[in-house]
Image (cartoon, rainbow, N blue to C red; front, top):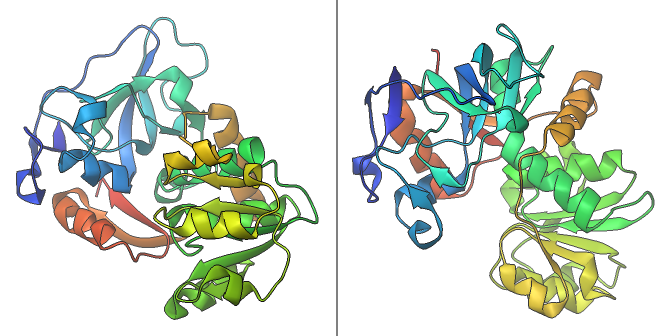
Length: 305
């Protein structure tokens, strides 16, 4: 099969596209013909070796945790899917080896959901970013109607989902971003806040009920200073917030959550912003764009192009 892969941790120069053997199908796993995948920062952080101390790797590594495609074959213990089913999922495992930047991937049944009525590129852009926002807002912060939520980096992949999900839940949303991203943030349903101005000054004394940190660094500390209770802060970027009373969010595979997100997409309540699409052969360019850190929406790989 054709795939993107690397044989050691290193740099973008170690990322290549070529032929690999197809992965094996386990008893409760599903073989998926991949149509599209999405790039996330974790993909290139693993390649660069930044996560080597905490991730088991078997080389060659095929990157990619987001996937959308069609079921080709199922293991004998699989009960929820059959060949021909359109699926998508967050295919994070406890190790890296079999990824989604390939014509074929094999993943556990428990990471997949159906994507009926949703095209592959849109579906591939949902799982990691969408579930991160969904789990942060519904499980950690339990955002409710009438609350005012502050989101960091509202125009990014996770931020764009967070704004919309919070609005669906009935919250008012403010989101930080650059001047160039203000229109995108407004279009998503949030009030843009200039990221170059200190939070307390930018908010002008307005009440903030809860906050979602997507950038790390000093953002969580600024948010804590304006929140009445540290438990009203959740961060996907700064594990140290737990010691301060906040919540750290590490997204997990969640087919029920994917079903909810897919339902909102079909109803037209949730849009999936796609920043740019690349063919598999241009995966290095896709990684470079992600590494730049200023995309609005998701970066998608059209694997079957």
